[in-house]
Length: 133
Length: 350
Ligand SMILES: [Zn+2]
Image 1: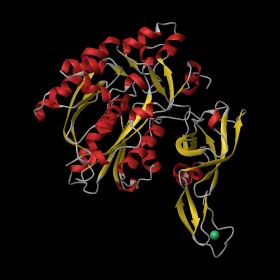
Image 2 (image 1 turned 60 degrees about the horizontal axis):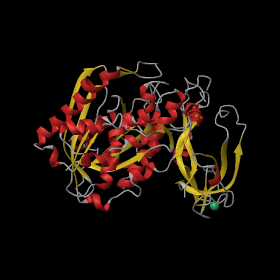
Image 3 (image 1 turned 45 degrees about the vertical axis):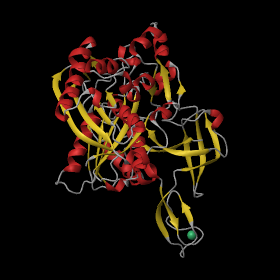
Image 4 (image 1 turned 90 degrees about the vertical axis):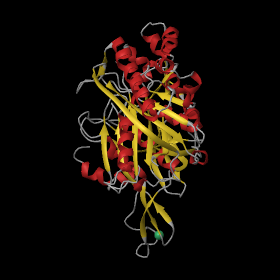
């Protein structure tokens, strides 16, 4: 993460508090923020917007063989979550019993460590989601 | 009027029982559990640390108080398990909850009482004419306390935290702080050296000359200042390194069991160190009625106590959190010792 620090630092708003944006022309929310609205193009008017902190699972999978840095976290769930404003994001699902992780399940955002691989390096924090009833 | 305008508690969902820990070390779990008056302790997941716990507690405190994060003038995080030796937890927390860069922030350490030292700092800043721009201050006590495997502390060292927001608006204060008092001496009962992974303690020395001496001095000192006696209080909360010490110290001071029950949380979640007394106080605020008086005394090894006398205001009845502290404890999942070792990274190859 060291070499990518400035890049990651610029994404703190996105990672910590779901900072995205919103097209005032067509009413679509984007996460992560987009430079232009894909449907309105030049007519689009984009403004910064915080995403809602709750949504539902629209698709998920259980990971048994994690990529480097996540190999000890297995098995874990990753899911595509549709937030209450229809914006979608890919996230890890934590603190949720297997039976409760399913399509349509309501989820809420939590603040967690995303990666902490190098004991002398910086710690990356950000969003994950958990099933809420 | 200056006092508490909001509070939030976060306790990780995983629990390990004292009996499960004792099973691994072939000890008598039932006897240890009864001796400590602790049934189980809260364990942070693999991706939780004092910073993530602080953020969750802070968000709940902001939601409860209804105060905009951008109006916070100070954020302090008291912990003995700050994720970084150098790099403040407080700046991460402030950013993550959406506070404005125009604030003062710092990490504090005083074993189990740094969070209450932060409350005192917030009280002073909010009351002070300089800097006049601090309307609200937030102090958090949070830890992922580590006990050395097979050490007596392993049965109680837990994860959790609480955040308190201090303010002075008459219509916002839910518990007025009538006075605060501290008692501090150089007492080496518990410590962790730089780079050392686990703290060390002085065994029995942590009792009488350490915990009991300072908590009693703190409690008696403040009661003398405000001219009150134990029977004048509706509730009392003391730091809770285990479930026995606070009961014993309450008795020695002349408090009855019914005054301390609402604030006694360690039997169900273990000792959350910097979070311990603050979680107990939050639980008391869940129940306190307008006009009721609360004595709260923290303890930090090394050693010192911060004492507070609070009075619940009429605002408290219209501002109850959705979930009480005790309700929150019920959201739990048990893990065994192997998972505990994995979560808390006690295996060197992890
Ligand atoms: Zn558009």
